[in-house]
Image (cartoon, rainbow over all chains, first blue to last red):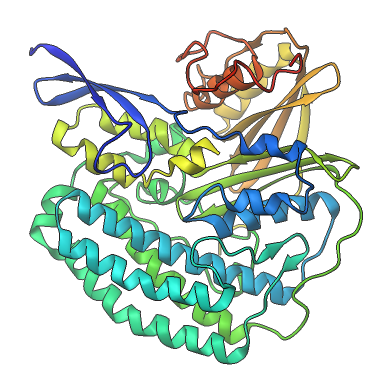
Length: 359
Length: 119
């Protein structure tokens, strides 16, 4: 038995765009235990409900994260709409679904690039982010923003997308589909990539369930769990079925996300073909009185949104539980017994978002 | 065909003495823990424990006094340590028998327990 040493990992580290800290207890080159610390950038955004009206809070909630900002806005609006029994027009639900799936494409492409960067494949990293630019251009064209869109509001959406732009969106997405498939071939077939991902950081189905993992983390371990199944939006009209893999290793997590990128593009195409004419928002009068808890499948996994009001223009409580919160215990479990050299890859494969976690 | 996600709000009120038994029932029936959150209410704090099974959400609602200790559920659901430490740091709620207790140092807040009803 070698001597035990504690190595601090983070909060600043080349693979970490945001701060999280792990105390890695190692023996020789093997990690025996990992103790996480978060809270370096806790912003207390939830407390802002005391100062911002419930209609204004959507701008704050969108700023929780720069990657899944649209989903946060949608989840917040859905919780308030639930508490106020507001029925959103069908066209608005289609538009929300389209923007949300575009966000998933952009989020997963960003993650694939970061993963490639993590194992030192720089050209692959740059290619992923080049493809992602097309998606950001589509955001800019349809919402005016590339990071924060501010198109979701309580009662619907603020902007419509005309038919011509929707068709252009489908054409552009079909254009990048070929490039994404080429990228997928490298991620799935290249030996150097497989060496870093296959069999690394296995999370069994039993552990994924016991540790309450969510999103691609859970689905890569064979857990049938995706809040798009019968949830908000129009997924029931798009023949949606979750992408499930069984191996539970880093390769499976990568494969789930690649499959989801292609699946999201197909769903956007279907949504564009089915989107009805009509209103994009309904007027919302009065204040929130009551409470509502709802969930949304963000690119990183299931997120919770809870709104509680007492009839004033300010909410009493707004709660957002983000996917990374729920995947940290699974990460800690995966790190036990891994090689020290694999720690950065394993941290990346949960697709950590500390901005979300710190709210 | 996948099951429909239930958007119905299932909120079950529990007392502090009933909490562990209810959570143990959920664990035994294969429920997944979704989240735990606290809210300031009149005369104390309300804690909501959310559990999911087959995409159906069930919430347990526990109301406690400002200085009342709560039994930790980390013995049954280890990931609860994230939420219990968060509530300990932000609301000042004390949990008994936590499997992983950061002792008020999980979040780096500029003032201790900023959301405590006494503040």
